[in-house]
Image 1 (cartoon, helix red, strand yellow):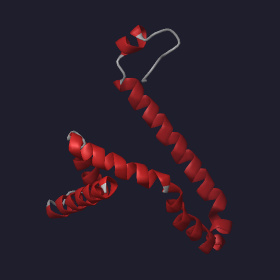
Image 2: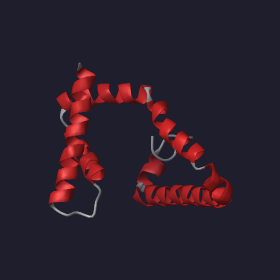
Image 3: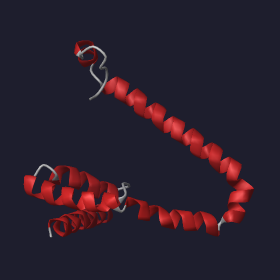
Length: 126
């Protein structure tokens, strides 16, 4: 029952995000606004427990979300054979770029004092 309540909270927050993004004509997608609302809502212990229960249930079945992607790839095998190398290069480069940007942002935001005072053998975030 708690997981069902958490799923309802997640869906309501996504709907609220969609409504805000549409009503205010924001260039930000509604689900992103909903995630920001979720971040604020997780400050409430009652909501946190139900959302955690829903998240645990969803994570147990995460592999099911990859089935549509696999079917899409199989459906478009002709495109994959024509453009597979280019797709692999673009995916690889965008992954490396994303990791590099994340590392640079973390390096800029991580205070240097924390790295200097960290116990021996432990550097960076916990």
